[in-house]
Structures are given as C-alpha cells and as structure tokens.
Length: 323
Image 1: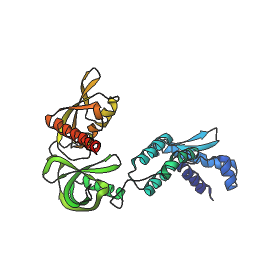
Image 2: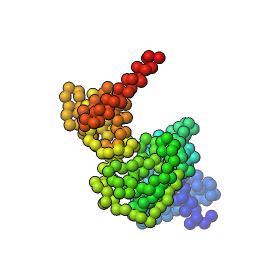
Image 3: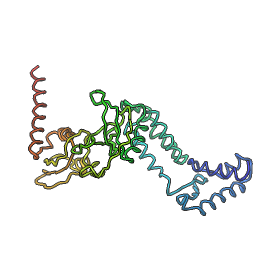
Image 4: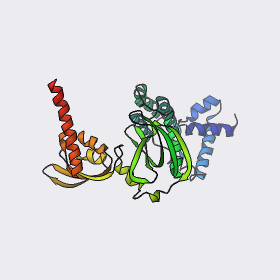
C-alpha cells in the first residue's frame, strides 16, 4: 500500500469513529512508527489548511489510550448520539429493521470505546422493540414525498384509512408535517375550506396522487405554520377555540409543557387558572385524563361538553355496579 493510500485509510477510519494508534498501525502494515507519524502529520496539515470546509476538524490525542481520534464542530457528540438514539427508540414510529439500521449508522460516528457503551445502552431496548401498526409500506418514503409536495404547495389526492379502518380518497392541500405520540401527522386543508385544519396520519396514507394545481398559503386566513404546530397538540380536527380551566394538580409545568399556548392568568390558594388556544376536540380527552385536578370554566359550550362526558363516565360505572 502506498503512503497516500495509507493516509486515506487512516482518515476514513477516523471518520468512522475509530481511534488510531500509531504503534498498532505500524504493526498492522509492517512499517515503522515514523511512517505512520508522517501520515498523521499529513492529515493534520490537510485539516489545518481546510478548516472552514471540514467544520474545524482536528486530530485529538488521547494519552490514556495512546491513540488519535478525529473531532469536529460538525460531528454529533457521543452524548448527543445516545440521547437521539434513545428518543428514536421511544417514538416507535419506524419498523424495527429501519430503527436498527438508523442506530447502526449512529454508531459509526461514535468512538470505539463509546460504541461499546452505546451497544449496552440500546441492546435490550432494541431486542424488545415493538413498532406501532402501519398501513403504508414505508413511513419514511411517505414523509419524504410529502415534504417535497408541501414545499411546492401542490394539491394532492390521498388514499387513506380512517381510525375505524374505513377507506377513503380525499383531495387536499397539505401544509405541514408534525410528530405526536408515536405517529407522524400531515396537517392539511380541503381546497377552499380554511376554517378547520385536518389531520391525517402519514402511516395510514397508502397512495398519493400529485396534481398540477398549486395553492398559495397566503390564501389561508391566519395561516402560520409555527403557531399551527403550537395549537395542534391533539390530533382531532375541529375549530380553534380559547379555553379556560382551573388546575389544582401537583405538576403545573407538565400541563404547560403539553399545551404550548397555555399561560397562567390567575392563581389563588393553589388553584391555577389557565388559558390556552387549541384546535379540535382532543383537548377534551387530555383534560379528562387529569381527573379531579381540572375544572373547565369557559367557554360555556365546552363546559357543557365536559359535563356530558363526566356524566357518561359516571353512568358507565353505575351500570357496572348494577350488574
């Protein structure tokens, strides 16, 4: 192997996350340590000359392991990779095969010693990993196709399975993709109907037909993708409304984190009055899950809806007791 080929091999090993020992390389190639040191010197010179292009990459020497490794501002830190891998496993949004493949790619950007640590961290979770049920062939392919369509503001017709497995086709104007509790959702509007956004689970889309017709998001009243994301925390379509409720539970922050538009407008003796803007009826399910810690106080129509749901729950338990 020529000196230039050997230098490239060392660089590629480092890019893959390996720590390179001068002594071990010399033994591996049956050459002197001086030759390997010259190769290391060439890499250092290259990185120094092209710092802007390489993301300030440089070689770092570890005196404990007596080896060099490549570091760069553009690389994810090992702790960042661990965090992303754990978050990916927690989503359950991709198939087990895809998740294993993605994490394997993450591992290539860790050091040799941290790769062992990462294996230990994720091995058991991968072994018991269970993806959520998907209707489409590949969630990633759907996502990538929809992202391109959204960028072009193009109308599409989708083949879709509803929550009750009813099959339908809808012509829509997609405006955004968000992720929420195991699923990716596409936010869209029906052409000319901009009063309520509609939500479609990406994994339930089994067909996409692109049309030549495009649309302008400026035609959608009050369209703001960032604000839409904050309001769409519960994937049930419905009108936008401002609600107020009292909260007496132990974790106010958990409520505020779950509702990005929420703000505390009053506090008296451990009772917090919270106001939030939300789309759809999913908020009802969330507030009901808080049990007696929550009491809705406005608007009146929402108060009545909550009362009705609570009464239904009570009747269900009464009927059970009667049996």
